[in-house]
Image (cartoon, rainbow, N blue to C red; front, top):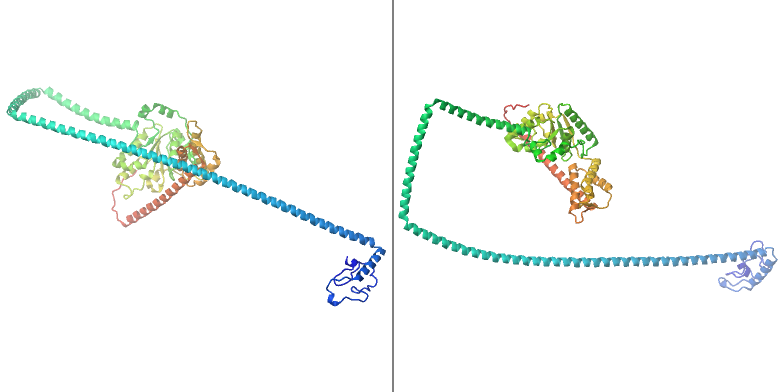
Length: 602
């Protein structure tokens, strides 16, 4: 609006809006004033210009006469309203910012209050913990002090008892010494009195001894004379009677024949009884029922006889393809037993604890045969008796009406290669006896061998085997099934019994078994079974008897550490064994061994 009031900085006029005529006397010059121009030295200062007022008045009059006066006024009002609206908007924004600042301040104060409350809570908890620690320490100090008092009292009691014992021992020793002195004095007095009596009666004693010796000599001479006369007369009468001589000779002959006949007949009867009713010394365990066992445990034997036949893989968890193959073996063995056919010998090899012995027992029970278990380690200590003991085993097996499944565990202990530097002469003879008895197929017994190192077998043993089955360590699926089976057997079932002390904490059993199966890679079935027993023992050893996840994880960790150590030992042993075999091979190659006489083989 500078053009309206004529106030400007340095110049006295302004520019009119478009359509307005210029004010009179302006001459279109923005800086003119009736030909008067302000001084150049004051061009940059604020001055009062009277001509401007005149121009403003003239402009107002012109504006009133103009057709656009109302529009200009409305435009000025609208500009003023716009400015007021903008100012109000700025005021509202300032008020909003002030409210926002108040809210932010309130939020900061609330946050500070919360922090203060948290710090107070933390300080309170720390104070409570500190007080609890102080209380526990006081209680521990009281217990320690009580223990020291108990130990002091116990020590004083022990010292008192020791003093009493020493006093009692001293009194007894003193009494024993007095008794000893009295006894010595009494014995000395008795000996002196007896010696004095013997010296006084020496002549009488000598006379009595002499008379007694004469009487004894006369009695013996008369007895000898009488016996000689009687024997002489009897021998003369015996010689003169030929019938008596013949009868005596026949009686002596019959007596000798009876003695020797009884001796040999008793031996034959004993061997027959041992083969029929007893158990050979090499057989560790058998399901064959003996008369002696029946008399000892009739109820147990009755339950065993009437027990139902179980599935051949009952309680055994293996890989599906291995289970299928073992079922085929069990079916073939069962049908062979029913049809009185010839049994096929079987070799089961693989790491220990993978179920070989369990399957051998179940195979015998499923097929209706008797099983007998022997170990290869029992053969070597028998020495020369090993051959006869081996024949007794097969003679005993031949007498079975059901047939015998002879399971030889750790068979490589005595069925190894017939090398003079590896096995002794007695062991070689026992091996030859085994080969002789297994040279042909039999319908009386079935041989099942189990070994961890079948490569050590003698080549003749491999020739006797009809089928070989490898038992490997369980994979993830089998480990999962084994863990669940033994967790149920050793933990859940005892926990559900009302009389049992074992309890189980609240956790997801299914998830836990899956997690354990993933951790115990490399463990055998026997090791997993021992792991289940370890869980049970941990629960029994705890104060509350509750088995927790932490206890289970601890036992799993210990089992894996033990397994890793076993693996290291096994690797060291295998390296050592390989080195020994290499050394023996080099030694045998460098030596010239003379030919030994041929050993007959089956």
